[in-house]
Image (cartoon, rainbow, N blue to C red; front, top):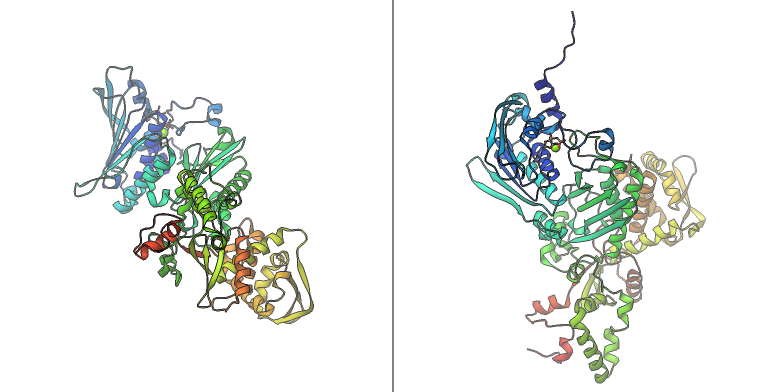
Length: 637
Ligand code: ADP
Ligand code: MG
């Protein structure tokens, strides 16, 4: 007896639906893509009960002829490709021709559509993929598809749905993704809940300005804290925004990738961006970003995932390299010093970094935002401004007339680019030490409170890294090797990190038994207590080892970790009293250090800035400008 039989069409569609229609949000995703492919300028999504009772999507796109409308519900029916060649160069969002058929097979579907050239529209009603009614209808140009009673005929699948609120959340995410991908299309999302209450969680007008859309979709606190990223290669273009470190999240929920406008997810590329932040973010934090890749469709395979949420790049390594490099460059160019502001407390409260949270530390960098997005054209470098700016010390040494002159010059300039002028002066002068932990400095006109450990750690880290990249490393062989007694567990950690330690410049020799000798260290560390340093390093490596295993850049990551720990373990500590010379030396080096005003290699801020204006207002004085003190002779009670 034959055992094999061809499956009926409806069952085939239902099986396909298992892949394509995972949940209400996947229906929304497919239908939104169809609207976009149809050239819609405005898309309205209405949902009931998290999309399980009803999803209706209307667009003002090209619509379909009556014949096409009937065909559209059939499997493998598509207007978007005809040949394999088309598939390899596909520019549209859809191409598989199975979304509508799959959706129709597991729900009750009403389709209304009209093309501009047709007098009447066409309406089709289908249940479980079977067309029950069809006929002409009055309709405006475009398409409206309503999907009701999802999974009514596949109760097993219905049970797999999550709580309404979760399904709803997924739909919001899906619409957000589409809205971020296509700012020039207006999106509206309407939700009716079980009580019949209507909410409009999203109503985004069309815009050409990417940032306006981001602000509408993700909120001002995100859009105000973004750094633009751009790379214009011949085969690959990258544009978008990455969040300042303070925006980082505990998960990847605020990471958006688009490849030729298609929203996709990619752990590998997400990791590439995280790498660009390396020492600016603690390891368990994930940066916020919105990155758009543009490349020739033939260089990317979009047909490797049934829901098209992943793509394969022909040359993923290159994409990885470029994105990491572009983000790293963008971060380096951005000024990252935190400001003393109340509204940015969240991150540190979340992290419970003692002391800092209560002080209101945040990595907000209003400076850059103030000057405008993207790269402000007249944003000058510190050097170019030093010709105009006069330090506080110089001011006191100057005659009144001279001062007046300079003030006038500056006042004149203030009208044109006052912000730039003030942003510029970041020269730091040491005022003193607080609690043997913080170095207080005048920074331009503001007060900078510097975490002495974080600052020293950053200086050492940058030094160690650049030394390490240098072929002629400054390695100090020790005249008398230092013997350290280790436990078998410690030795196991050392073994796992042997090459990385070697490359980081720390040479260890096994003396037999449990004794190791430290014979060489990076010269910057030669004065540290090396036994303590090694034991601390082993501890740190043990704690993070699991996170490093299996990473692509395993050795690199290990080496970087080791250098981070070396920097940390050898830096001045909280509580160490510092002489004035030591502080001046440290601040001096800090100012020459990349990211010197940002964070330590673990991602904690190095300094908090209490702005002059903030200080004035806290003392109940109206701050009118840079030279107010001079204008009013310092007395304005
Ligand atoms: P695909 O998008 O892969 O072609 P679908 O099943 O999603 O497959 O859609 C089938 C066809 O129906 C599309 O190729 C398109 O011609 C038509 N279609 C679907 N939705 C719309 C819409 N909103 N406006 C115009 N045409 C549509
Ligand atoms: Mg489609």
